[in-house]
Every structure is written in structure tokens, then in C-alpha cells.
Amino acid sequence: MCGIVGLFLKAPSLEPQLGALLSTMLETMTDRGPDSAGFAVYGDAAAGVKLTLRGADARALATVVTRLEAATVQACAARARDTHTVLTVDAAAADAVRAWLADHAPEIDVVSAGRRMEIYKEVGLPAAVADRFDLAGMAGSHGIGHTRMATESAVTTNGAHPFSTGLDECLVHNGSLSNHNDLRRRLRREGIRFATSNDTEVAAGYLSWRMRAGASLEQALQASLTDLDGFFTFVVGTRTGFAVLRDPIACKPAVMAETDAYVAFGSEYRALVGLPGIESARVFEPEPAKVYAWERH
Amino acid sequence: MPTVDLRAEPLRALNRALHALRPDTNETRWTVVNPDGRHAIAAGLDAPIHVEIDGNAGYYCAGMNKQATVVIGGNAGVGVAENMMSGVVHVRGDASQSAGATAQGGLLLIDGNAGARCGISMKGVDILVKGSIGHMSAFMAQAGTLTVLGDAGEALGDSLYEARLYIRGAVTSLGADCVEKPMGDAHREQLFAKLKEAGLAGEVDPGEFRRYGSARSLYHFHVDNAGAY
Image (tube, rainbow over the protein chains, first blue to last red):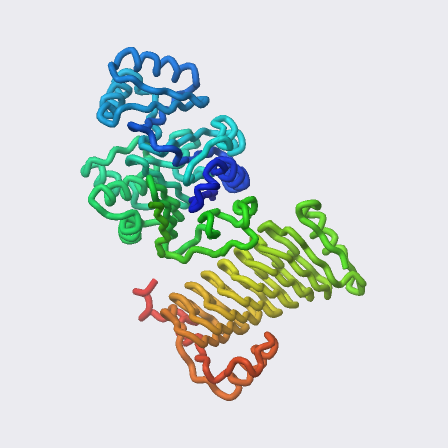
């Protein structure tokens, strides 16, 4: 069991409230996943690339960021939130910064990279995790959250969702995959990098690989129905897109609501109760093996 | 006519009050407001009362129902009316998966669509869905009727024991040991009675339905089938 929530805003007027709405949704799903929680928020576009770093504690991370700034000629804008720090760097320098971190501070995880996306995740109750990073204060166009009840790997921050394997790409998952080891091996050969032994990260890597080859998010998800074996409900975000897919057996629950102002996803309807205008929203259960995708232009 | 607001009172207090009702109670009409998708609303009732739920319900709403009529104004989550014994459960919106699972009696009426596994392991309930039903519906169904005005998804009636499935629309595929059977007068009569119970007499023509049931070839082990396991 896990809980998933997602909110994709069609109306820019709701953007300042994105984090507040998402945090309420996330906390409601505590019953489905009290181990750990995480979320991705698509906020304002940075001039360069935003790297979200995670350290064991805020002080250790701050020290590394200071060392990094001293060691690279690249000017970094850093904004710390508890155990995470978002570094904004020139797109051209992102690889060098990542390489420096891998060499000099391998204990620091790069949780996400993208122009708009930031990912935060920690072990603990969803309300506590949302609070530590002030999710309620964040603005953006779309966001995805996950509350985890671990089954396939340990209760660690690295096992928490969302997983990101490409710029501005993230995925959350309820379920378990059975062919992830084989697929990870194949995707590594294709140059996709994996940070954990988690099955969900393989699903994220698979979509990144497909999209790298030119597939749209919708096409990548369609192909995953053939190549992924297991149980899943996925919610996926890209820089401008938002998508949902359930496996053909569809054991894992899913409810969606759509209005003129937003598309929302919840593992249970309870997660959607606090959304504005939910009483008159079109509430429906996404069909098995059918890709639902929205794009903001 | 008690009205219970689930934002003001805990769900357990509501269910406890409903369970405490005596068979001759005068409080026969209850309204539940702000259900907000909570689970197990009005589960385990055993009194001839009428409960109106004003909104969307979560999992197992009206589960194990006996005697009561429970009306859900919006959508119902997983397992609505699961293991119902008698009474009526009416969903005005859509139902999620496993609607009426293992139910032994009563009527489950769904105005919208039902998800996957509708009527899984049903044991005597009458289920009527005005919309369509999802895949693996009536899986291992043992008795009762499943009437669908719309379409049925993949593997309808897989490993069916008994139970009669009346489908008006298209069936994506039949499950193992489920076959189409001829509609006799007795079947048309039964179907008419079920439609009437749902208030559809005269509105829906029983002649438009096809009947599906068990081929009964999986009742006993045949060595010829060994490869299929």
C-alpha cells in the first residue's frame, strides 16, 4: 500500500496555492503510507538548471555547498530547506557540479535536476515531511506527492518517491514491479543512471529512456504497458505535462477529478475533498491500461 | 429523521448509533452529510431503515448490509455492498471495483458505471448496473443475477460456478468456462422482474439482452485440462 496524490493546474490563478493544496492532499494519505513521504513541485523556471541536493542534515549539506562554491568558478545560487538545498547553476556547468559532488561529497544525493522541478523527500510522517520543507508555502503549476509503505526495499530516504531520472521528469508509483532487475541492467547499458535498487526508479528510468529517444510522455507510458511487468498506478510529471497510468489488472486504487481549473489525482477520494469546487468536479476512476495525459502550453 | 454531519461527528459514532437501532425503531430515515469519501460508512446495518448518504463514499460502504436501504448520492469506492445479505444499496453515481463482492442477497443498483471485478464471487445478490462494468466481473460467481445495461469488460464470468449474467451491450471477452446461453421464457421473465425491481419496467426491453452462464466444464478436474493450470 502507498498513497499517491497529484495536482495539475489549468488555471494560473491557483498557482500560488499549489503547495497548500498538495500538502493537504498528501497528509490525507498518511493512512496509506506513514513510513516516508516526498513530493515534486514545478515552480518558476530557473535561468539555468536547478539541482536539488539532499544531505544527512542541514549543517553537513551547508558545509558541502560552501566547499562547492569555493571549488568551482561557477556561481551558484543556493536556497536551503532543512536537509535539502536547491542550487541554481548554468546549464553548461551542471555536469561539472555533479561530477564535483560525486568526487568530493559522495554522501550528498542529487535528488532532482530540472529547470522547474524541485523534489523533496524524507523518512517520517507525511505531515512532518511537508512541514519541514514548507510545502504549503510553495507555488507552481503542478505537483506530485507520495506517501510510502515500503514493500520492495528498505525504509530509507533513497527509497522514498518521487524518483527522477531525467531533467524535470519525475514519477511516483503505487505497486511493485517484478522485472525491474533485468530492465535496470538493460537501461544502464543505454546510459540511464540509477541511484538505488528500487523498482520504481526503473520505471522512471524507462520513461526517461523512451522520451530521450523522442517519444512523448503519452507514447512512453503506452510502451511501458508492454515492457513493465507488475502492479502499478503511476503519476508522472514533466516540465509541462502530467500523466496517469494504471496496469491492466488495476488492483491499485485511483480516483481523479477534473474541473476547468485543475486535474487532480488521489489514491482515494478522501485526498481530493479539500480541493476548490470538488463538489461539482467530474470525479472518475481512471480505466486500466489507459494513458491519461495533460499538457500545458 | 436524524441527520449526521461527518465533519462534526466521528464515523464510528454514526455506525454505532445505526447498529444500536432496534428492529421496531421509529428512527427509520437517516441522512449522512459530508461523507467526504470516508470508509465503511453505514457498514453492518441490520434494521429496516433508510440511509441517504449525501455525497461520495469511500471503501466498503454499506458492507454486510441486512434489511436496510442505503442510497449513496455520489460515487462509491471499492467494495460497495460487499457481502450484503439483504436490503437495497443504490449508488447514484459510479462504483469502484469489487462492487457487491461475495454478496449473498438483496439488490445492488448502480446508476453509473462499475469498475473491475463487479460481483466477484457473488453468492445470491441481484446486481443491476445501468452503465458498463469493468474487467473480471462475476469472477467465480456462485449464485444471483448480474444485469448490465451497458457493456462488460474483459474476461466476464471467469471460472463461473452459477449465477446468471444478463448483458445488453458488448462483451469484450468471456472468461474461462463462461459461455453465452439461449434466453428462454423463464430467463426473460426473471430479467423483467429484476428490471422491475430497479424501476425500469417498460423502459428497458428484456429482449435486447444476452445471457451468459457457466459451461460447467471446470466443475471437476479433467486430466485433459492439466495443461491449462
